Image 1 (cartoon, rainbow, N blue to C red):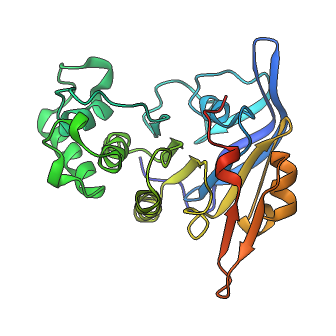
Image 2: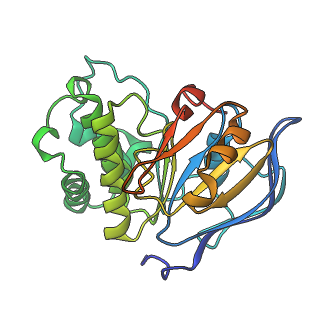
Length: 269
């Protein structure tokens, strides 16, 4: 299916609320995300950033309000959405090749059983691996690869299904600064080239500041969205995190955030 026209809304939330049982996470969230936008998702630990992705994936039912994703109510198993969950350590002795790992993005529900046209599926896997520039190590055991290499193959797995939207839960966590920048720029290039809508949860906003269109923050039981210059200020972030966060500007006008990563360094709800 072709991507929606640029600028058309692909996520529409109206007075949306999220809860687990009787515990309300956040409420009264109204926002839209347009086709082709790259949105960073920020917020203190436990504020409900990953919960937002679960709602978009149809894994959690809204506690109140309404949510439309790609013109429909969210439902589990939506092939139009590529998802990279919070990264877990992959067993170093896992014998699965990187290529076979990527193939799970097409037939992950039937490990070891071919689904659809084998030649076509193999082509899609090759395309995804090429797109993330991982051909050099795609045939090596994934457990023996570096964190940055594994993250590229996780992205390739999400892309193998040819989605229209990417939801990435802390894809930069546990990577060194160089690989954070490389992966962030790779995601931005993918989004532009394929007109993908991207929501990316981040610990550290600095690698993303030059490339994101907007920032969606989850804090104090609510959700809001704005341009980086509107959201990324010393006063705003210090209030959101209830901690001293400083936003600095260099002589070229580039923005840097100090103190945010330490406040967001644990897994979220």
